[in-house]
Length: 363
Image 1 (cartoon, rainbow, N blue to C red):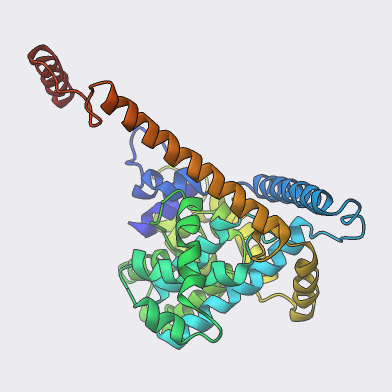
Image 2: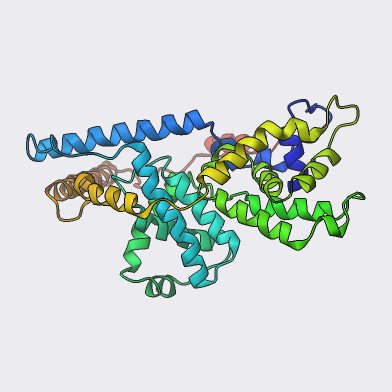
C-alpha cells in the first residue's frame, strides 16, 4: 500500500474517479501537517515575531529600557537549535534500544511542536525529552517514567510530565505518524515481485544505503512538505537510480505519454537536494552561540523565580480562585433558592422529547 501511494500521490494525471484514494490521504498527517516551503517559512517567522514582541514588552514592563540591548533570536536561529536536539533523539533511542518507529515519531512530534511554539518560550531540551517519552507510549513501546528519567543525566520526572500535556495539545492530540522508512520497506518488497529486477540488481546494501538517506531526511523539513512514499522513493533513487526508475515505471498508467519515472523526476529531484544538502547535524559552535543568546532573551514568564514568572503565577492563582468562588456561589444560590445543584429532574414530556432526538440521531 505504501509503495502504491508514491505513484498515486506524485502523478497529477491520475484520474481520481477511477483510482481508489490512498489511505494516507485520510490521515491527520495529510490533512493537518503538510505545508509548502513558503508556508513553513511564514509560520516560523510569524511565531518568532510574535514571541519577540511579547518578550520585549515583558522586559519593558519589568524594567523600562531593558530590552534595547537584547539580541533576540530570529526564526532560522531557532530552527538551528531545534535541529540540534533532533539529532539527540537517535542517540537516546540507541541508548534505550527503542525501535525505529519511536525515533521517527519523536522527531516528528518535535518538529510539529515548534510549528506552534518558539524556543524562546520552551527550550528544546525538555521538549525533546517529552516528545520521546510520549512517542514510546503512542507507538506502544512504553517505558516507566522512573526508568526513563533515571537513565538521563540531570533529568527529573517533572521535566517530562510538566510539558506532556502542552506537547499533546500542540500536536492537536494527533499522535499517528506515517513514516518514510515503512514506505521504503514497502517499495523494497514490491521490487522483489518485478520480473525485470533480479537479485543481482537489488543487493541488500542498496536498501541499507537508502534507509540511511531516509534517516538523514529526518534532520530536514522533508516530511512536512512531501509524503512518506515520495521521500522513500527519493532515498531509493539516491542509492540506486535504476531500481527507483524501474519501480516507478511499473506503476505507470497504460497509454501514458511518457515514462512515469520522468513524471516523478522534478519532485524526487527536490527531495534528493534537501536530503543531500540539509540532512546532516548542525554546526555545534553555531548552535552554542544561539543557545548562549537564548539565555538572555528567553521569555521571563517561563523562567521559574523571575519577577514576570511570579507575577504570572499570582495572576493565574487569582483567576483560578475567582472561578472556584463563582462556581461555589452558583451552587449556593441554587440550594438557597430551592433548586437542585445537579439540575432539575426531567418531566415526562422532556424525557420523551430527548428520547425521540436520540432515535433520530441513530437513524
